[in-house]
Amino acid sequence: HFSAMMLDRTSQALLANTAAMVGVLGVLSTTLAARARKNKAFTCTLSTSVAKTKNKAKCEIYSLAMALLWIGSVVVVIATQAFERWGPWGYMAYCSSCAALYLLVPYTPGLAELLHIGDSSTAWHERYITKANLWIAIFSFIGNYWYTHYFYRVLKAKYTFDAHMLNDVPICLYLMTHAYFMFYHVLSNFAIRFVHTRYEKNTARFVFTCVLVAVMAYMTAVGEAVTIAAFPYYSFEDRHSAIVIGSAFYGIYFLASFPMFYSIDEPDHDRASAPVTYWSLERTAVSSFAAGMIVLCLLDFSRLAFTHVELFSAL
Image (tube, rainbow, N blue to C red):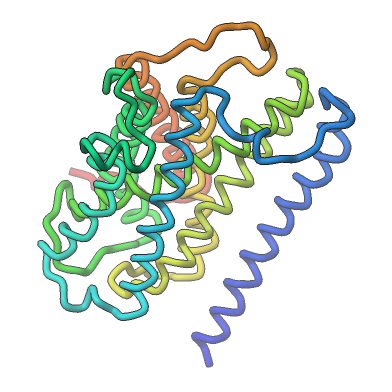
């Protein structure tokens, strides 16, 4: 009975938080943002959210298609509890296969062309998929290596399955995070692009975009928290606080990452004639490291402001 009450309490809190944020977003979309609309006859179609550069559009659609595969496999794994038969190498093999859909398949001759992701006229280091992979690889590494310890200390979280570890974090999760973050960030690209193509650049659009990113960040965190609850080897001292408060904590990751990832090879939608500035791998890496530092600061500011938890034990 107690667990059922906790579930109800947690569900109610999540629904209330989500409804409030979506409500604010809805109000802004019909009031503040409406004043910045570029075209009053604008209609919402898929084309308004698809990237204008061919290579980026192909890669984003490919990323979403691959997400259907690995998300489907996660559902099967959880439903059948196949993970109960895995050891450290079983986890590594599964998570590596999910990450390989982004890290290896786009560069495999034959497969890349078959999936319409290969582009023989563009060097591998100039392709959007390479820049997206580099950006996400750096950011997800920082997230696992550093940010996970905030969950360990602040939310008393812990992984209890047998796995190869790096800085007390299962190495397989570094790989699985790559697949998760590619999916999240490509989805956020569509939403942010929709706003930028629909509204004029001004204060109203900026405020609306900030609220949109905050709502997407929280909902992304909630969605992952709820789905991972079915995995028994990631536990918390207080599951209610971990899901409700932890989702807000986790959502901080995306406050910086969503808009910064969106900028890669994205044209200026406010100047139709402006040429696209294609990013170098160096610029991509610097952007990801910058996002990682911004998030680290935000996490620590939040820890200091809302908790009394010491991150490092006294010597």
